[in-house]
Length: 125
Length: 125
DNA sequence: CTATTATATTCAATTTTTTGCATATTGTCA
DNA sequence: TGACAATATGCAAAAAATTGAATATAATAG
Image 1 (cartoon, rainbow over the protein chains, first blue to last red):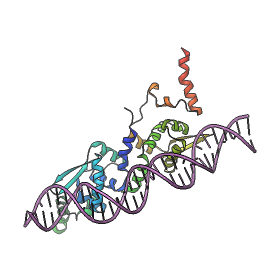
Image 2 (spheres, rainbow over the protein chains, first blue to last red):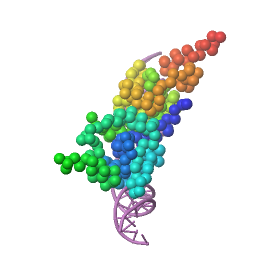
Image 3 (tube, protein in one colour):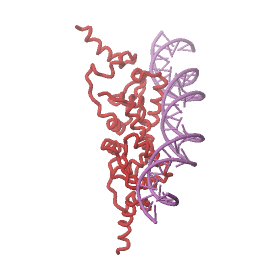
Image 4 (spheres, rainbow over the protein chains, first blue to last red):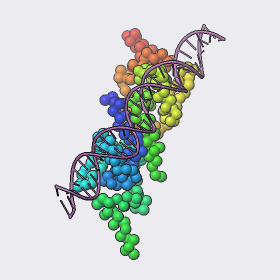
């Protein structure tokens, strides 16, 4: 069981990229749809799709299609562990501190639901 | 305490390289001299020195000079932990399985000592 | 079928990294 | 001092990664 340095280096190489790290951090709790990630990175859609493609082809993430939308999630627990090591454990944030706040304008079904949940209390009082 | 993805990516980038991983793996138990690493990688001396220079300038490894020889070691425990995560924990090997076997021809003082230690029992019986 | 929306692919230009090689530096010994 | 041995540095060529932008595909609604 000796180490394959080439293979290991290639895997890490894909993690050593700021936007890809941002993507991986975003999906490591639960899967997120591409439109989320586009809003989060604030980059052109083809750019985001390219990064997703690299990660997918390397077996780091997996996609799940739902109509027009595509959701991405980490491929396995090993990747999740690597991310925990590199980015720190996932912290459960307060709603008002949530990174999702800036994604509320995303038009995907999931976001619209979340937006309602967050907006309703404001009109309730 | 939000994550700086650029900085994190830059740190990992230097680890995402097969020869540098090999170097780091070699020095993570204890410091090793450059001539060791040249023998281990089987690469030209300037090549190895360049990789060491990159790692040194990034604060990943530290050097310790002893006459003509230079020994390198990991800079801190955080790096060691990253390596444990990426390469697995250090396994204490049997002498006959040791990676050091192939380094015995290295001319540095440390190696000559190790060579004696290994050779003597063969003549003792 | 056509239009639209979400996402993917392709490809070339740019930028960065890697590598090879010549040369420089530094310490030691005679 | 001069010669040698171990290591470092500088620089250019080659290779690889990144990015931007045009275009393609696929699902859905009408």
